[in-house]
Amino acid sequence: MRLFNIEMKIKVMAKKDKGILTKTYAQAKQAVEQGNLDHARDLFDFGILKVADKRFNEGLSVDEKIENVKVGVWLERFWYGLENNNLLL
Image (tube, rainbow, N blue to C red; front, top):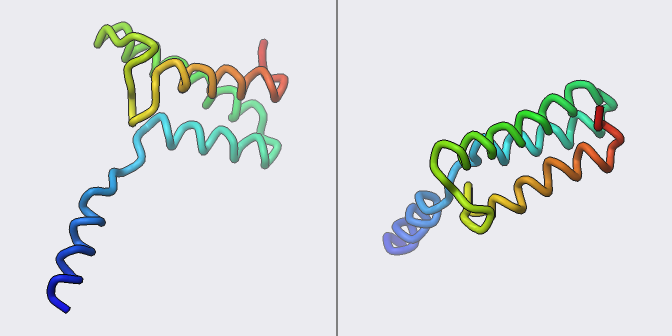
């Protein structure tokens, strides 16, 4: 029984917390679902800004990862969120 408890602790410790981009994307999708389109636009824009900031300050390429997701995928997610929900200004 004791070995089982140790294995469970290791699995929990290995799980990472969700980062700012993951949370922002989830909140933006939720805002779209709730019809709060202005807030959704702000969140999608904020996500693009955070990725751009990391790329500028850390010199990341589109193939490098933030929160275990490629930079290019983050940019696509946020951009498509704007585009697919008619949120482009």
